[in-house]
Amino acid sequence: MRHLNIITLAAAAVLALASCQEKYITYSGPSYIAFPDTLSICPVQQNGVPFDLVVASTNTSDHDRTFGVEVVASKSNAIYGHHYRLESQTVVIPAGERTANIRVIGNYDNVAADDSLSVTLSLVSAEDENWELYGQQTRILLKKICPFDIHNFEGWCRVTSSFWLQYSSSLDYSRLVKAEVVDDHTVVIKDFLMDDFDITMTFDNSDIINPVITMGDEQIIGDTRVPFNYIYGDGYIRAYEAPIDWSIDICGRFAITYMTLYVKNVGTIGTYVNIIEWLTDEEVAELQ
Image (cartoon, rainbow, N blue to C red; front, side, top):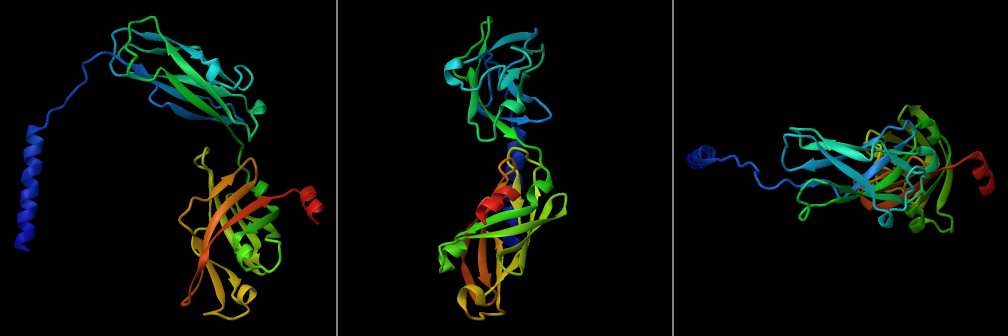
């Protein structure tokens, strides 16, 4: 205990000495104006909410600073006025401020979910600003954000799993099953991997650019007799989320999940990827 107290006192002394000697450094060199990010994602939403792109300066000024915003056509494939527009083609950093926003507004109806569209913007100024060490340009990716509705994820869906790729004797690794809505963000997928064993999944679209789907706590999803023809342990196959990012495509109505399967008191079976595709009645009719 005495040894521990000595270490604690020594650490406190070092921290006290550091705080006494601390000096606050302020930047007083030339003024650099730049885009803090060289790559951004602009969510193109149905409600037309604009995306704010930050322009920053290392110093303040005693007067407003106005910069032109130009589209670099040679580095852009998004069409101005069709896929997107700028609220203004100038940006003003007010006197005494270090930042300002360029507002980019995507055209929801003209951007497809699978489009790969981008625009590169450049800052121009008549003032004697220093640009050499910082970025005058930035690239913006336009990403369509479909509104989330839990009812788009009910009804028929096709589950394709690498589990059945390993344990099925047939060449069909997919199952045609149905999802039922539980609440505004949760569904139950009936007979997910095996008959009579359902799985509950929850959607989280709080981050509209990167929505996620999760299964939460571990769940029982099968009977050991189905793939192995034998009762191992208590006879049940359990699943939990593997430490790999699950993804959900709201526009495309499909998800990719990774699960680790195991038998209690026996051992791990393996980690498997599952692709879940929600289908229309017409798509189901074509499969049957």
